[in-house]
Image (cartoon, rainbow, N blue to C red; front, side, top):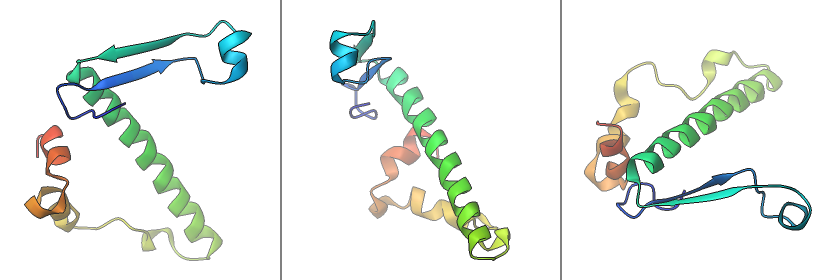
Length: 101
């Protein structure tokens, strides 16, 4: 994705990995979709979801290796985590608007 929060968003997807074999030996595909902000936002949500899933699992594994309870992780037990996503000076307001916050 390139600039998924703008009207000129670009999504590049497909099976092509931009390597030599993909370019010259394999039957790969590459699709470039421009000016479709809703699609770019959907891709952005999915990428954030996958990232957060693996980040959570990595923290849980790290806590296990340190012999700490898994509850000692980075998740807040109240709504204080939301403040940084809604605060105007945080630079994250565009993302907050994307999610309807």
